[in-house]
Length: 419
Ligand code: 2PG
Ligand code: MG
Image (cartoon, rainbow, N blue to C red; front, side):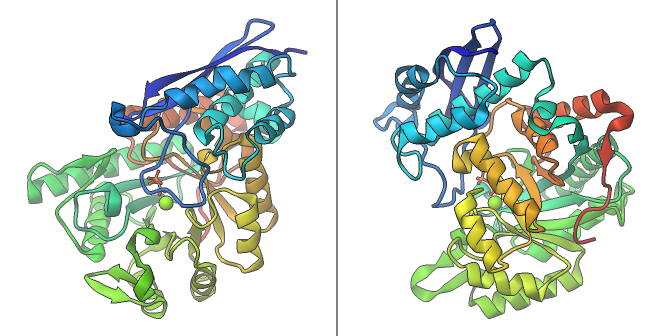
């Protein structure tokens, strides 16, 4: 048995230039690991609480307090524990914090300790992290989904929705799908630059000065065709509808109009008839389970995805399942704060016939843990953004490495749900 001997936290910067927490863990046998945690820009209100310092430094967004909580409160509770008993480690973290949303210690501090423990447990056991999580059955590489045009809160473009995604479908291997994604993203940039001149880039996704979703889809499909992948790449949307919701009017601001749920369902139905749209994330605001359920039954062939709706939280997912609110769950570990809770939600999703799409956050780090996690839990899909930035490519590259390590044992389901 190996035990946790030392644990501390540090403040580091994410790829978006924002402070975030890194944990360093050393075991009694001398295994040393680090784990850093991401953060979102358009966060769901039911996500685990991120503890920030306040004050002037980093505009209040420093994380020294969260980092200190790791050494001062978390380390004393975890030192001496079996590093491979993740359930016990995460239970201890949850009890130590004692609040429903990790407000006391900070979800950012708790998750850094939780992920560091998984990594150390794997290394101490002498197996790759994905195999440590999923055992010998962990052989499936997820299909990549990538935001190539950014709108909403993420972007200076005039587009209403947050993410315009390419959904890779019908490739023989993860590495082939990735090569097609890289080429299509490059052709898209060439087309947009020719039309508009230099186009701003938000976390790797392009932000052209267009306002209409159909225009975005048209140019994406042109890029797919020119890159030679017509028919193999479909389209997806992250509506991030909580950001478009006008609570007092019970309506959404879309296409310069105020739309009620019925109009929005019609709008998504028309889009799905006109385009090869196979994935719609957060089409309604985060408390509107009922409208999600209506869209899921109206568009049975399409992935209706809960991100802000579920916040990777087993309690919220349970409600969604009971109401058939979606058919896919977005899986972001930092939304719930421990690896065990996120895996519980993932398992519940799979047992109830939901798809699982692991996702990074818009402010992420070079930590590639979620690549291992996606293979470990057998997720069908992974949403990592455009493959043009370090924090994103850290995960893509790790998946390439896992694919090479699995060699002939690697499985890749070219066809994604909804196609
Ligand atoms: C999302 C993610 C990635 P954020 O909404 O799915 O696009 O964004 O990390 O800002 O929540
Ligand atoms: Mg989202």
